[in-house]
Length: 435
Image 1 (spheres, rainbow, N blue to C red):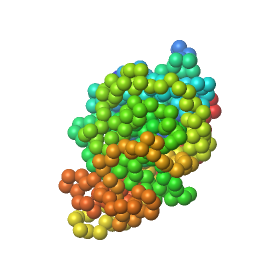
Image 2 (cartoon, helix red, strand yellow):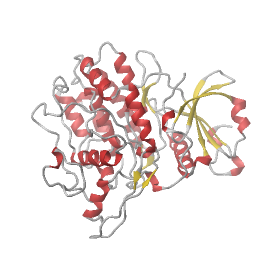
Image 3 (tube, rainbow, N blue to C red):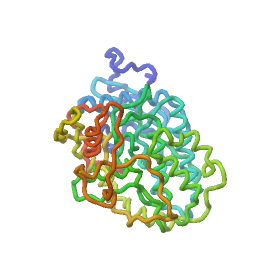
Image 4 (cartoon, rainbow, N blue to C red):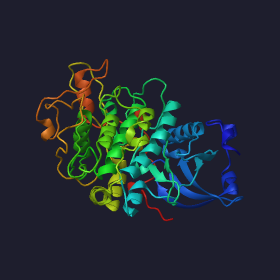
């Protein structure tokens, strides 16, 4: 039956599993994510191929909520740069989501395969992402998990469009949002600081993506010992709160000033001053001729291969699906924060790690302005250059300074803060594509 007829949670509208198999042939599982399994599916009547995401209700409340949320959001959107929902079946045990099939490559793979790669190519990618995000924001939808892994080419044709996927964390902005979630390296300062936030977090994430695509390096990086996620995230978040990134030479030497300007405006620490997606589309680097046509492929690819080597990068991303999550303790002013407890995480707290980029130095004698500084030096944080002077943490209205410091001393909790039985997927099964 058409997905528009499905009423979530209404038992009389449950589909029978046979309704799914009568209409579609489901192939082998090609990827197992934390919340769902992903199949290739063929519609029997037309032979057309789709992507099928199957969520098992028995995997817990978070999984059920993620599935229902993705269905609700995707029913609202229709844009050429967003993978469209085609069909939904809800049985007593599962949610089946059928979406358009994107057969193109991830952006990293596309760059590595190019003979020539320039700022203009990056500008074309970022423009499409901005247009899709501006559309979402016009509907008051915040994606909340924009990252390179969620950007793919629709097909393998030369001029293929970029499409955005993975909407299970997307949320309607009915007032400012409170629960922290997302992928740590892409989190905006207001999320890290546990302040209320909204659509500007997506623009910050686009700035991080743009930074990586132009240099091959992540803007915020923290070395970590094996399995030391607590200190890794703590130090990473200090850098994000302070806007502590640089346009490092030699990687940014050949990048235009217009590109640096847009990155800095997208990664503006103060969310009220951050450029919007609609404004960014009108920036000269996107809509004008300011993007350089100089070939930067060799430098970018060398850094991508170093920092985001396929096997190492992907394994690091997926293994941390089961990273421990530290809850933010609730306490009164002057009270000592309680010791956070560890728990498994949902994909809202997926951490991505990579090998360290070269030591940072200033390219043009300037550093992006930071209006917010990191956690006080007295907080338990590994020593480093950023800890050389006393710093302050932004405090949410009504929040004590001690609470704000505690928020940075541990990674933000995942969305909704619910405890559930972990899904059946194992981290090792991520990205094991066979087709």
